[in-house]
Length: 237
Image (cartoon, rainbow, N blue to C red; front, side, top):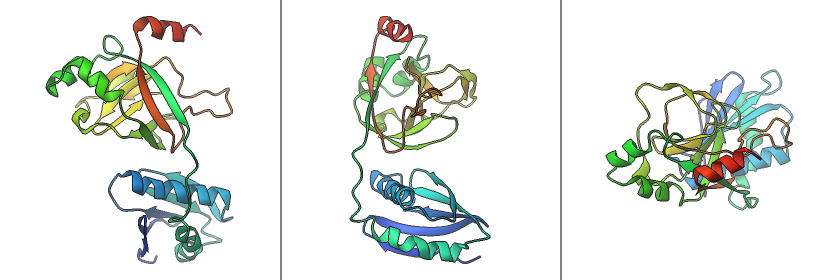
């Protein structure tokens, strides 16, 4: 298996590493930044619009793209060569206009059992924590853990908080959590260790919709605080 090699790009460095005998990891640095993620998104879109037949699956992450291919028809070195023209286009390749998604959230109380304690330990009031969390426009970096679970970038540094030492056995569907420097919405009731600060009545995964995942990689997301009454009204629709 050949060693990794690096191709210099204006948008960052594309580093290749054989992840297995049938997968290649293309990384754009090791920092989780919007610039690096845009390089991932551009390469993903280019490969989706002009596929390489021997590629089986594409798995985007924060600053890398895992490419699974048919090892009987292609090797790592040849795939790197085939990717060169795609990488050469990244600098001038425009990104499609992102979809903007607003997610209503009822913060605190029974829906956000960790909000008060987390806010106190961050030396702020719950209202300040809510205002901070609902102010940015977040970017969907990738989906994983469970169908519809979107990892969002853009959490204010002042809200970064470690996960629970002992994860909960069951986190309610729609719970909004903070884990480290990330925030996300639990699409299903699952075990989880993120700090729960609120809940949304909106379904993140819809089996009966053409777009089953409400959020897709590259989407822009904003959280909107709502009352318990508004939550109940949303839930009854």
